[in-house]
Amino acid sequence: MNWDWSAVGDFMPHFWDGLLVTLQALALGSLIAFALGLVWALLMRTPTRWVRWPVGVVTEFVRNTPLLVQLFFLFYVLPEWNITFSALTTGVVAIGLHYSTYTMQVYRAGIEGVPVGQWEAATALSLPVRRTWTAVILPQAIRRVVPALGNYVIAMLKDTPMLMTITVLEMLGEARLYSQQHFQFTEPLTVIGVAFILISYPASLLLRALERRLVR
Amino acid sequence: MTSGLWELVLKGIWVTVQLLFFSALLAGAVSFVVGMARTSRLWIVRFLAGFYTEVFRGTSALIMIFWVYFVLPLAFGWQLVPMWAGTLALGLTYGAYGSEIVRGALNAVDPAQREGGIALSFTPWQRMRLILLPQAVPEMIPSFCNLLIELLKGTALVSIMGMGDLTFSANLVRLALQQSAEIYTYVLLIYFVIAFLLTRVMRGLEKRLKAGIGKEPERGASQRELRRAESTGVGAGAGAAGGGA
Image 1 (tube, one colour):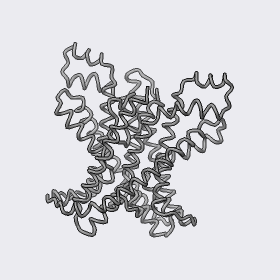
Image 2 (cartoon, chains in turn brown, yellow):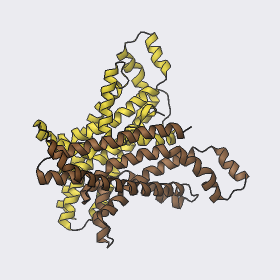
Image 3 (tube, one colour):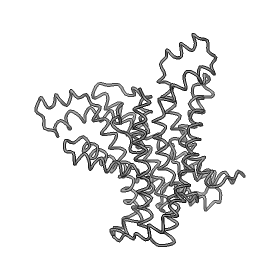
Image 4 (cartoon, helix red, strand yellow):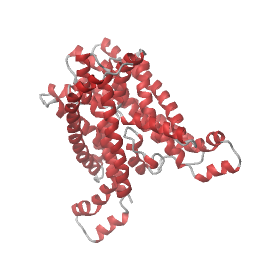
């Protein structure tokens, strides 16, 4: 095994470019996942079966099929329907949509975890439905689910390398490009592997600390 | 689509199923060995098992696959057959997630059970085999079911390395037909059906195992959802709370 430090040095500028794209995709993807997940969770609580049933089927379908194929679907099929996005936008939408079906479950668990007495109190005070949700239920529910949502952000981080397949130059994309140009595979791939550990491990420690503060 | 293209898709399904089977076996073995090692009395065993888990959970499965395909042959001179390279990368990564499930379930067994084993002077291995595992394994099944679905979704990644799985065959069909909507819809449906069948099988297994220790399946499902991120596909953070909460 021969390790070439100068290759690491040459790769680093590309690495920072890739990291920036990865973090962009992660931040935007998380926003979509958090917002859309809440929408799904609320739709699943509407009284009519005609809303719950389709939402349930669609989210179950998205959750149980590979993100990679969904990426290809959006990237290749949408242009056929004359809808064109940039590769990064497509990737962000795919990741956000995919993970919204997970965060939906988290929100649901959080909402179910709010004690029944809170609902009853809201009814007793004759709060309108909207106020009940925004002032009573959601603030308590979301507080409980922040650590679980954070865990999905880390999961999303580890799925961003897939964006490489639709030509987004995030970390893995940059590493592959560099490897193909310089025929050095070991260094760039190892650097980004270590980078992922260096990001996700402290992030998970942070979440654990946050969990101790927020939950109970 | 012509019948030749359908044959391609069928071959792809077969490769995906094979890969799923082998990597699930490897991941299962890794998760039990590492998970039990994390409850060991020796700190060095606990440390090594913990280190393994953090490293493999910390990186992305796709990067592991790249590493096994490109770096292993260069660095160590091991050129693996694609099937085994894919199995190795997926099995080791998902095994690390699985080890958290095993550890969480073992820790969730009532401490009195372990103490009872000590009082009856069982050896540590007897305690594990006769007391802890029979009670912990049924609790692991729902989490392992989720992990199995994640693994199924993970198998799609090997197509990037040119292994002829279902996703790869879908890409070939797209190139042949120059249209994507139809084939990708079919492929998503096929993945969904496989995932559905796996869920059914695991439900049945859970029912049988739980009946064996006199419990009902599916309790506290919503609490489990809060934990799910930790046991399937996520950063190092399961902490002391993982698994059977």
